[in-house]
Structures are given as structure tokens and as C-alpha cells.
Length: 143
Image 1 (cartoon, rainbow, N blue to C red):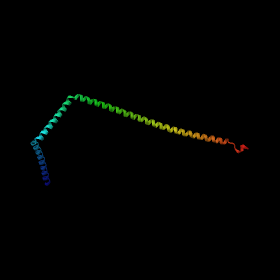
Image 2: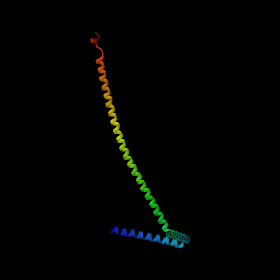
Image 3: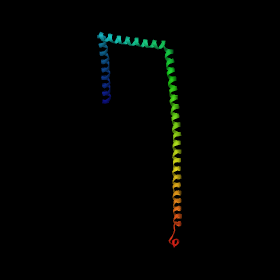
Image 4: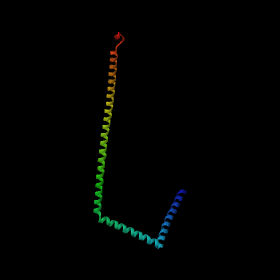
């Protein structure tokens, strides 16, 4: 119960402060002619600017819409062109990957073939050396 009374009291103070602030602001505006004049001048200037912009937009509506459509179409074409370029780059990258894999495979195959040829050449030389050793004269042949 005590808390309800405190809440009501707080609410009363808050309402009183707000009402006092509004009353004070109204009194200052009513009594201070310079402030009133400044506010009225600013409001009139803002209203004039809004009216000017509104009439400009009304008078040039079709031209503005046409320019926006043109810019939108140009942007759309640029985006499509960029998309096509990205697709072309992706296709070329895929082709480059395939070519690189093919070149790697060919290089490995060539290396194996060279190794086999070297082995065959080495075996051939060993056979020739063995045949040459057999052709050498022995002690029995010299007597």
C-alpha cells in the first residue's frame, strides 16, 4: 500500500514537472518576441522550400522518371555484362584447369617412357658388354 502511494506521488511529480516545463516554454515563447519571430521565419522558410521542391518535382515529373528509367536500364545492362564476364572467366578457368591436368598427365607419361627407354638402353649396353667380354681372347685361345 505504501508503494502505491509512492508511485502515485512520483507520477504526480512527473506530471507536475512536465506541465511546468510546457507552461514555462509557452511563457518564454509568448514573452520573447525575438524567439517567436525566429521560429515563425524558420517555419515560413521551410514551408517555402518544401513548396518549391514540390512544384519542381511536379513540373519535371516525366523527365525525372525518364532519367531514372534510363539509369536503371543502363545499370541493368552493366550488371548483365559483368555477369557474362564472370561466367566467361569461370569457363576459361575450368578449361585452364583441364589443360593443366592434361599437361601434367602427359608430362608424367613422358617421364615414364624416358625412364623405360633409359632402362632398355642400360640393359642393351649390359648385353653388349657381356657379348664383348665373351669375344675377348682367353688364355686358352692364345696358346
